[in-house]
Length: 247
Image (cartoon, rainbow, N blue to C red; front, side, top):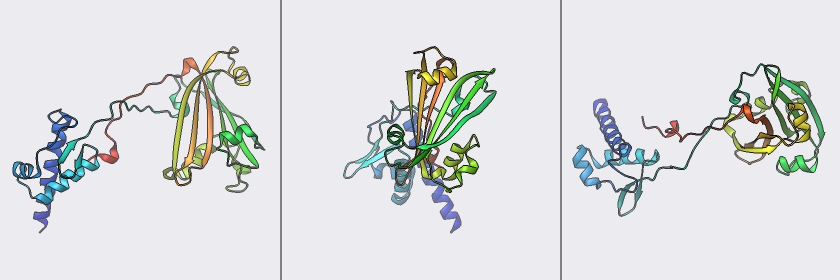
């Protein structure tokens, strides 16, 4: 019994790998229709159940799709999709020698911050500011905004921990989603003074929003100003998603 099951597993993976290889090599082009199930059953010497298991795996992995009554077709790849990694201070184009927490404030939520945090915040919010230095020169400044919820956890005891916003994220990492936008803007006057920039000098502004997946509520918003010579954008077509890999 175990030998039969092992043989079936080998057969369906043989079909998967062969079809995937033909798609990757361009033997089957996007939009092409695969052979009929009867033809593939004969070609691979497998049962209909085994073949359909193979085709289901390929479909779930995004290689093919089926059209009822017609057959199976090769998917069109996402040729205009790119991804880049941004890891806060590790993404800067210099060796950071110091990250300094410069201020922490609990303040009444004004209209600008309320809009920034999604409009659902009332009462008070926290704004945390920290700066990054390279060779003792300021290269970036980050302002992090998040709602103030007394004693959940006891914020007063933890606010002066520079990585507290990261701790907020990692508590429920799989329940969160992030949005990132990158702009080149004229440096705001207050930020320019702290970064020692000339008035109107362009800087990168990276805005990151962290939301709860279930409610879409905003957990935090950070505005990260970086001197333009210390940041560049490189994006690549994504490699095969680990979650879609076929084993």
